[in-house]
Length: 337
Image (tube, one colour):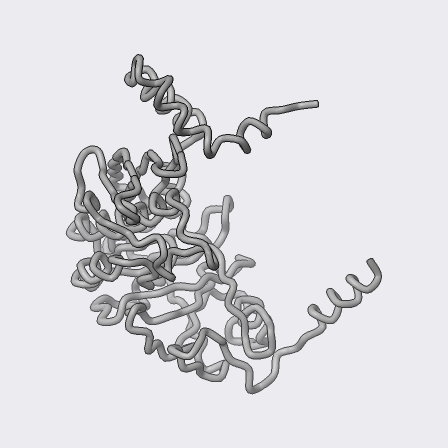
């Protein structure tokens, strides 16, 4: 234990150096961290000039799973805000059936969507888990990501800005096709709740930015840019870091699409105004709102399972045998001694 405490103290004692920079890989050219890259976020007091931001997120649940197929439910929603006022919200949901089709994972949705008939290679490096092929259930979360992007694109005329949870990087097969449509709007941006990026000195980038002792940014909301030059062809975005409320302890990674044709300072002013709720100070309330709106509860999932099993009728007993290859953990979880 003492040795562990010693190592933990060594981590906390690391200090910022004048030549430190963000590390993101070979396709990202870093810039040395500098006070000149901090920019104060201005306040907008004129309520008549407020823009509309569409906050988009999704939820999913695995209903049934076997070694050869899985069935899930995906819910996608968007909530439209003007400043801190909610002015509209919409949602849609669909069932999804992923099955093994001659060594590929085949997608079918109910009702039919643009994601139906997509075929995924389970050995694709972007999907694979280490040396093992992709778990079939992972495709549900991949399709949910596509559905979030597609939803934002289809509702883009409703808003001045489109804000997704996460990043704007195309990490999965076919994702760049959906992002290309979204980027045609010129309005796309994204905010990450978590950030695992570090600096050359092994420090968290968000803590490093927070600790830079610059009088200019104390007790203010701000954004930091530039931090890297992004040369990744699968990541058509400019990367920022933002502190959206002067009293917040949180700094977030933020991205806007390349060829963003809106006013970035106006965008940050809008989000800052939306980030003053004490439930999560400094985090846009619109993202909290839409997260709760699309979340699929355990109770809702259980109800859907019951409905499907009842609809199966006499075929349920035979169908349930397929599930025995994957349900041992859930049985053990229910055992109490």
